[in-house]
Length: 64
Length: 310
Image 1 (cartoon, rainbow over the protein chains, first blue to last red):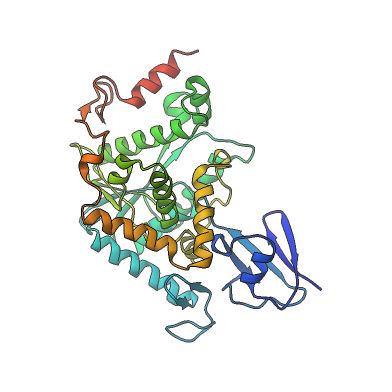
Image 2: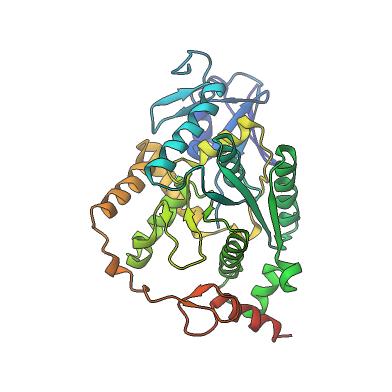
C-alpha cells in the first residue's frame, strides 16, 4: 500500500520506505515550503514513511 | 532524528542551523533567539509600547504570542480589508485574530476599511485602477491605518511579522533590478522619520517562514491557512520558490543572502545617497501624516478620488 500525502484537498501517492524529504521531492513539492504531521504530531523531513500511512502536509509559503 | 538538547524525538530539523529540536525545546529556543535579535538590532525594550500588526496569519500571530511570552507590552491591530475571494478571507482572518486575542486576554484594535471609508479594498481598486491588482491600494491603506492607530494610541513601535523568506524575496526582487533606494531602506528597523511616526521593526526577519509555521503549529495557534486570493501568482511567491530551490541544494543560502546584505549595508556599501527618492517629508494637511508630496498624501488623494468617482 502506498503512502498518502494530503495537502489541502489534494492527495499524492508515494512508495513507502522513503524519507519525507525524498517523498516530497518525488511529487514535486518543495520540502522547504511544507511541514508534515503524522497522527497530529509534526515530523522531521528525515522521517521514514511507512506503508499505508497518511501524512498531512501544511504549505507554509504566503505572500503578496 | 533526536533533539540536540534532550535526545528525545525531534519534531523539527533546521538544516540552516544544523539543529534538530523536540517540541518543548523548539518552543523555548525560538523566543530566546528572537529576543537575542530584538536586542542586537535595538528594536525595542520592555518600556516601549508596541503595536503588532496582525493579519490572522501564522507569522503575525506567532510574533504577538512570542512578544507576550517575552514580557513586552504588545497590543494588536487588525485591519479588515473587506476581501471575500469566495472564501470569506477577511472574515476568517478577523475571526482567528479575535479568538487569539480573546483566549489570551490581549488588547486588539480592529479597524474596518469598508466601515471607515465606505468601500472594501477590491472596490477601492476598481475605482482607481492603481496598479494591476488591489495589492498597491491595500499596501498604501494598511500603512496609513497602521501609522494612524500607532500615533493615536501612543505606540512608539510598530512590529510586523515579516519573516526571513519575506525579506529575502524582497531583497532578491530589488537586487534583480538594482533598486538602490529600496535597498538602502530595507532592514530589521526603520527609524521614525517624522514626529508622531512609530519606529517600524521586523523581529522575525532572521527566521524562516517554515520555522514560524512550525512554531504556530506546535503552540496550537489557529491561523488562517488560506492565502489572500489576490496573492495568487504574486512575484514575491515566485521569488520565494526560486530561493527555496537554492536552499534545497545549499542549506542556509537564504539566510546567508540576507545577512550578507545587512553586513554590506553596515559596512557602507549602500550609501544613503543612493536613495533617489529621499526627499523632505511634509505633513499632509488632511490627515497629519508625513508625505513626500507637497499637497495631500497618497492615501488622502486615494480616498478623495474614490469618493468622487461614483
